[in-house]
Image (cartoon, rainbow, N blue to C red; front, side):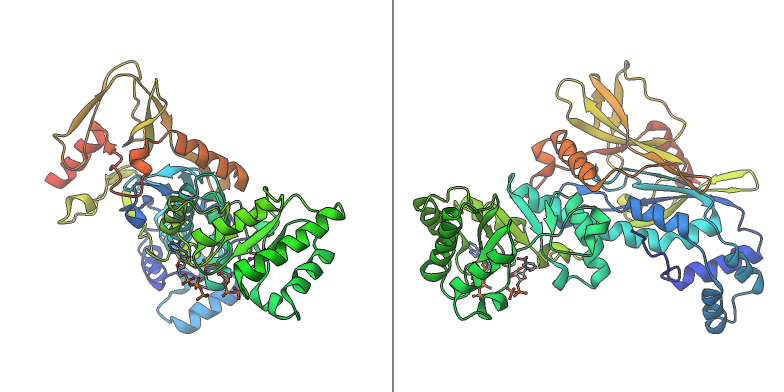
Length: 479
Ligand SMILES: Nc1ncnc2c1ncn2[C@@H]1O[C@H](COP(=O)(O)OP(=O)(O)OP(=O)(O)O)[C@@H](O)[C@H]1O
Ligand SMILES: O=P(O)(O)OC[C@H]1O[C@H](OP(=O)(O)OP(=O)(O)O)[C@H](O)[C@@H]1O
Ligand SMILES: O=C(O)c1cccnc1
């Protein structure tokens, strides 16, 4: 699936006005290093699930400007010089990208993507990279929380009709599946995520028949598997569930009750109705029927319904997932960390009154430190790219703002977080399949202490700076 292939002007104009200056001032060949990172965890949570890297690669390896784009820019912006427009005509991304694989659990302040490229290129790509990663990381994180609350039950993404446009619906569905949803109702996503779209039936379908029974029975003539009947159109317990049971019984008598069959509840007290429906289904020998529910669900309602003993084993989640309802923006940023101007390297940081907002300078990488016995993650360390860690020696790590808070690690091993993705403009990374990303996330959860992933007052996972990086930062601040 091609991302934004014909949408190269989907950027903020200032990227182009600044680039116009760079070309004309001979700064376009300066080599810049930028970091893309998030400043805080969304949803008052303790973690993020990163997503969007595959679309970043697709965008960067296909980015070019054609004569139509040049005409539009020329007509609207007489200040853009011919020299710059010529530059755009010949544009190709020639830089280097390192990134953290999709489906990884990540934390604020650590680079999710590191960009090293001619300054002008790194500038032009800023807005699209942020919009891709902001969106997908936010939705993957929301999905992971809902899946976490569902405690092993299947979660389906149903949000397209409430998404902020079909592109948000499409890439939101992708991110939701990375985050752990077993599927989506979004048909356009089939080609992107290589999974058939899934679904049940609507109230209008049931209402369009003279009786609820007719609606259910007729459906079975054209759908052999996955027979999930919507049972709340008239009266869930007095009509919907009994009619569903009549149809299931008939199918069983005819020897064609499918593997996946069941009901969907979409209104009323979902805990009470699911328990009553379960009893009725079991009494009729339909112990393995799916009981699905939808209706403005999110991670808190799913958790609450489970606490109430709801007998629901498939959760359909739309609006609150696809729009990241309680936090609709992630706020990932893209900050300059180094400039190499004709061989003269300067490390850069952005100063702020808030120490937590001062950016980290230099050409850096991120590693995760794990406890050798439990295999649980202990902390992440942002360090300069050429630094090494000796796993045999004790390692002292310290809080990046409250530096007196120290820990000495002795029994640990180190894992690199970032992988090379594009080198000299050429893709070098084979993106895993969406189901591999989903599995990767499951493995990641195994390495996290519950304190980090719990919803209420999660523990702040440590993302620390190496000594060398801290000294570089302090040196620049002192200047
Ligand atoms: N047992 C429950 N505990 C907590 N919240 C519930 C429970 N059952 C349902 N809800 C939630 O309460 C909210 C309102 O449900 P309610 O049935 O009143 O409206 P509805 O589902 O929109 O029904 P209708 O379409 O008939 O108006 C929904 O978000 C639903 O998920
Ligand atoms: O509640 P959400 O989490 O957003 O999940 C999606 C909702 O979309 C449908 O309702 P809608 O009223 O749009 O259509 P319907 O008439 O088929 O129920 C469906 O029945 C769910 O309630
Ligand atoms: O298939 C479904 O049940 C469905 C799809 C989209 C939205 N609500 C429900």
